[in-house]
Structure formats: C-alpha cells, structure tokens
Image (cartoon, helix red, strand yellow):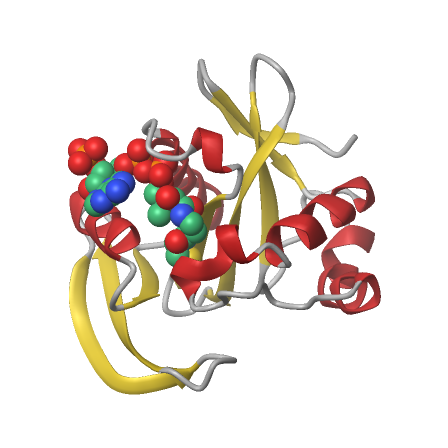
Length: 184
Ligand SMILES: CC(C)(COP(=O)(O)OP(=O)(O)OC[C@H]1O[C@@H](n2cnc3c(N)ncnc32)[C@H](O)[C@@H]1OP(=O)(O)O)[C@@H](O)C(=O)NCCC(=O)NCCS
C-alpha cells in the first residue's frame, strides 16, 4: 500500500492506490453521494477514464510533486475508505492550489470528519508544498460545503451566475473562495 500522508485519532489519509479505483467509481457514479455537486444521477464514470485521469499519480513515486493529486480518507479504526481529498492547479510560483473534499460514505457525514480532514489537509499542503494560499469552490446551493469552507476561514472572492450546467440542464452559480495561510 502506498504511504500514509497524515492521520488523527479518527481518520487516516493516504496516497491513492490502483485498488481504490472501484471505490471511486462506486462513489462518483452514485447520485446520492454526488447530488450536492450537481450530479443527481452520478457522473457515469468508467474505469478506463479514471485510470487515465489518475495515471500520472498512480505511476509516480509518493514524493514526486505533481500538479494534482487525489488522496483517500479512511476510518482509522476500521480501515474503511470513507472519502477523498484532492488538490489541483498547483502553482508553486504563486504558492497556491485548489482543493476539494468529499466524505463519500453517507453514514460518515455530519460527524466532523469533513472539517477535520480538510483542516489537516490544508496544514499538510502548506507544510509540504510551502503554499500561502488555498482556493476552493462550490455550487452555490451546496450549503454544507459553503458553511464548512466559511467555518475554516475561507473568504468568498467571486460568485459567477450560471457558471455550470448539470446533466439535467439546470444552471448553477459557482462560489469561489480562498484562504490565505499564516506565514510562520
Ligand atoms: C460537505 C462535506 C465535505 C461536509 O463534511 P461533513 O463531515 O459532512 O461535515 P462536518 O460534520 O465536518 O461539518 C462541518 C461544518 O460543515 C457545515 N455543515 C455540515 N453539515 C451541514 C448541514 N447539514 N447543513 C449546513 N451546514 C452543514 C457546518 O458549518 C459544520 O460545522 P458545525 O457542525 O459547527 O455547524 C460532506 O458533507 C460531503 O462530502 N458532502 C458531499 C460531497 C460535497 O458536497 N463535497 C464538497 C464539494 S466538492
């Protein structure tokens, strides 16, 4: 198994493995998991598209710095995969990236794990990549995500009307937020 990235009493976050691909397909194709992100019927993702999407990181050494990476959140006590963290758009020159979080196992939502994993992830990225700013976004009607980001100190920078059209043809406004990290 690829390496542990960080952990707390309740959760463990590790690098993505080939064996995670079926779990991600299950989550991303499940409308109940994906509806708050605008995919009421899931994303209809295939194994081959996921393998090509994550090819670079699945083949890379854990320590190689990549433009984007996906990490798996597990229940530290049982080992069950419960969600994912991602960073992308890494810009080392401007010391920033964009991140995303998903507690994909519905039984694990609303228990503080989204907040805990996101907060630890920000600390990890700041330390590992020397970042000074983290960007995040959500469709405006995803109030759980919006409230979580505000709670963790993200400030709204932009709200773009009808930015994205879902597979049902519904348009969604997107809210962009950012958090400037303390320099030590
Ligand atoms: C959004 C998400 C990451 C929140 O994680 P979570 O573990 O369910 O939430 P937490 O228990 O950590 O709650 C942290 C904060 O989020 C907000 N929040 C959580 N559930 C909420 C709800 N039902 N209504 C409103 N705000 C809510 C609150 O600010 C909460 O703080 P509080 O408990 O002090 O009020 C998680 O529900 C999820 O993954 N949902 C589906 C995927 C998704 O929407 N991802 C984000 C967009 S990519």
